Length: 107
Image (cartoon, rainbow, N blue to C red; front, top):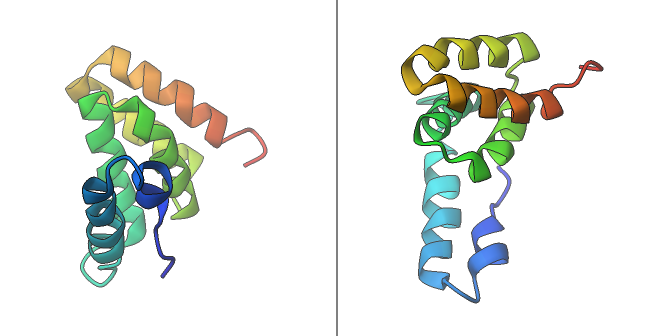
């Protein structure tokens, strides 16, 4: 398991109380529970939740993580297409614009 330090790296000096549980609990404890839910499924759930909320600042990181966790270009296209009818067309467009920069034609 890779130790997550993004919270401390980006917010540690400004908001250490927020950064610590981000790194230690969310990414350290929850994401590491691979027996309960695979990293690929966690990525799919996370990407869908972020799209639903319109949290596009965090979406790019999690789309990249989804790709690393085995989500294919065809799968992400299907996930976004399916979600579009529940989360809204503009949010799907925004998600597609980010996804196409991560899953390129070379993939």
